[in-house]
Length: 279
Image 1 (cartoon, rainbow, N blue to C red):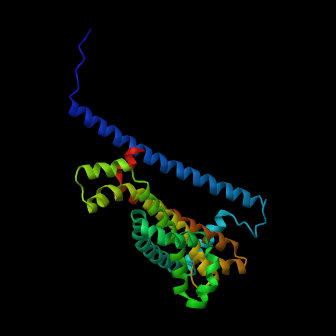
Image 2: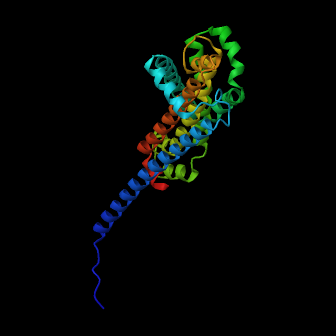
Image 3: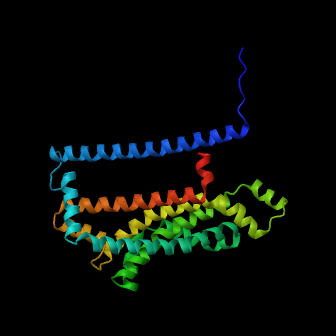
C-alpha cells in the first residue's frame, strides 16, 4: 500500500482557519440572498393582493404606490424633517437610557441592598403602560420635544435595567470561584468575568429598549403634540386618507427599527466575538 503523507499540524490549523473563514463568508452571503428573495416575494405578493383589490385600495395601496409616495415625500421635503426629528429624538433618548440603564442594572445585580431598594420601582414602571403617563407628563412638561424625549427614555430604560440585572445574577458561580482562587481583585472580577458574561444580556436589553423606545417615540409624537416627527406624519396621513404615505411611513419605521437592531448585532460580534464562534 502506498504510504500516506502526514500534514504538519501548523498546516492543518491554517487549513482549518481557511475553511472556517470560507464557511462564514458563504453563510453571510447566503443570509443576504435569502433576505433579498424573502423581501422580493413579500413586495410582489403585496402588489398582487393590492392590484386584485381583495382589500379596498383606500386602505391597502399597492407597493409601487407606497414607494412612489415615499419618493414624492422626500422630493417635496415632507418626510425628511419629520424623519430627522424622530431619529435625533430617538437616538438621544436611547443614549440617555443606556447611560442610566446599564450601570443601574449592573449595580442592582451585584448589590442585594440596591436591588431591594430599587426593584419595586423598576418592576412597577416596567409593568405600567407608557400611554398612562402621557397626561401626567403633559401636565408637568407641556407639549413639545422635552415630553417626547422623556417618554422615550421611560420606555427604553427599564428593559435595559432588568436584562443587565438578570445577566449579573446568572454569572456562573464556578467562574467567580475560579477568579477568587487565582487571586483576582474585585475590580478584576467585574472587568474580566462579570462584564464579559453579562454582555449578551446588555445587548439583549438594548434591543428590547429599541423596540420599547420606538413605541414610546410614536406615543409621544401622536399624543404629545408639537406637530413634528413620524408619529405626527402618520396621524396627518390618516386624516388625509393618504394611504400611500401612511404605509411608506410605516416602512420607514420598520427600516429604522431593523437597522438599529442589526447594528447592535454587528456591535455584539465586534465586542464579543467568542459568542459567534460558540454558535
